[in-house]
Image (cartoon, rainbow, N blue to C red; front, top):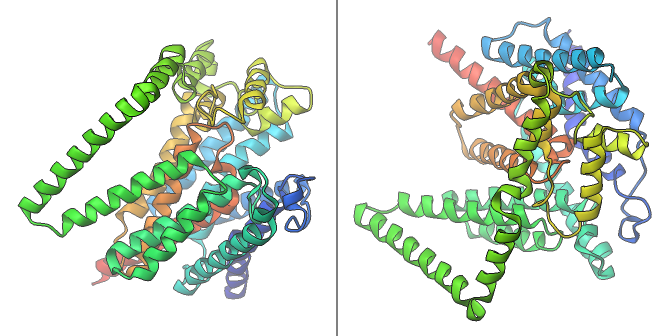
Length: 441
């Protein structure tokens, strides 16, 4: 039994490190000159299906182990979400491999969480290994970018390192950059600031503008929070006053720059589209309108693959798909280059509502935030755990944030979500052990 647990732990560790990087690399676009050397080999779609079946098998095996109430509720929520979604596909006559795969791609991070948290207690050495592994992977990405892709001078979307796309490469750079900056503010070691700033600069090449802007805002907030924490009352008042004056000055500068031309253009864009017609805003009333057609669709949704996520896009490519899917895919293909997601009328979270209904949406959100709450309640013991807890939060922030802009967000990217959920399971396990030791004491 001990041997099987240790073996399974190694399999899971392989899954969240080597496998997710290999799979990401396999999804690089064919025929792009920048990718020819670093794109190793394609992995057939059936392999991902086998991965999901394997996770599902291990997940249900986890129910044979004793669970604490918190993990049991998360696991039951995951089961309810999956059963509701599959029942909906079967009842509506839309049962398909694509639809079921979509359900499990959304649920896969939850499955992995339960499997890891119910397995043998994650050791500190495993976490250190994961950190070192992804540090080496990031270095390989940077080297591939600098020596194989940047000299060819292609579009920024082709600066992907060894990952599947440039946005993912940019996101990983920003996760490391933000975590190093967070560590610098607490350790005051300048080497970490230098590394953080270097990675931030590199991220401007495989540019993901929205996430870079969010990261800069988080940097500013972290710095202000750290600065305020080291000041007395008068110092804090002075800093807040300076921030207000600088913000007001920046606003007036933008308003009057080039004779006010920039402000006029922004006003014209606002007048033309209106805030209510911007993609992340209009996506929600559209999704809500579609599920109001009947009480059944309001509760259970249109079904996986029937609105605007991965399976829906695949159905359109195969000449099938609903009216909604075809319209959204057309908009995505026409506007993808220039609108940066601001005009997409569906996104990861609005399609979750439309395809799974109120019940599926609420169950998914409850499971997700129950995992986050457990990590939040864990009291970190040292610098490594503090940095990893911050990395966990930052990764989820950019995943949630990007999900409001694009139909295909990083939630489906296992190279981000699997290590993140492994970390969540580690913190939940440590919290359970801490609570047990307190009760014994």
